[in-house]
Length: 140
Image 1: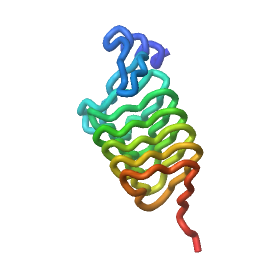
Image 2: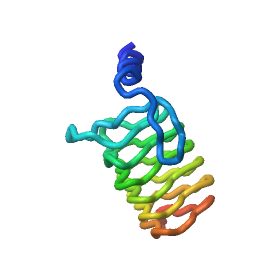
Image 3: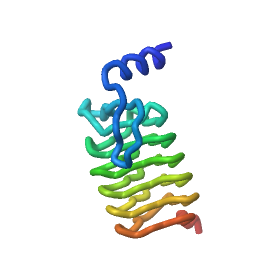
Image 4: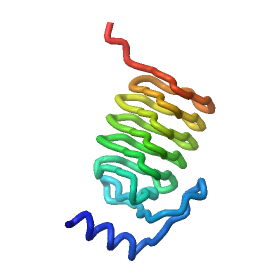
């Protein structure tokens, strides 16, 4: 009931938002853990209260940002992408489709991570395109 009420209040307060990709849907700004106003989050997306979303960043469609993850600068998380753990997606990066960025992974500025990519460690270079890419911590 509370979530339904909050959704209703957000719709009245913020209405529909036009995202950078032209998508228009009901959305509201995220409230960061320190109480500051974060970036726009579509009503259909999930961002946990423990996550940091910079004011210019966007989370749309059915994407999820969980745990202590950070979406910085003008980064965009879309599709069914999941950002979790202590992962960071930085300025101008795009994580989309069914990709997962988790653990301590860092996606650099301008990188595109798509397809069914899975990244849980290390640094993903800036200005690179990764489709169905897998970077997993070596347990050996």
